[in-house]
Image (cartoon, rainbow, N blue to C red; front, top):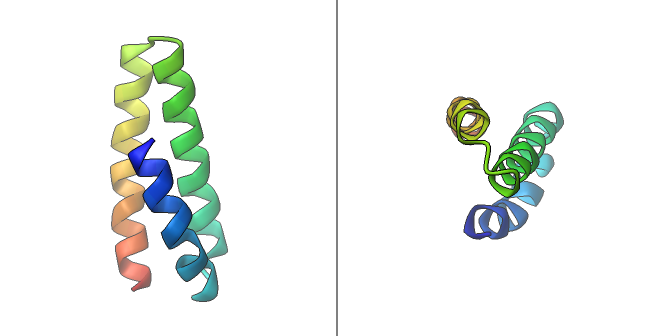
Length: 63
């Protein structure tokens, strides 16, 4: 929930910098992580969290 709240605040800044693809990928990653958590699917959660961290690196490059 915290990650989602922070992303909601930052997403507009990312979109303003024309990084629509990166924003969409990160939003999808958060959604996938939430689904894996709800399903109690640890391996899927770990895999998507790793992907999410790689996307954070991409987002850092936007700024």
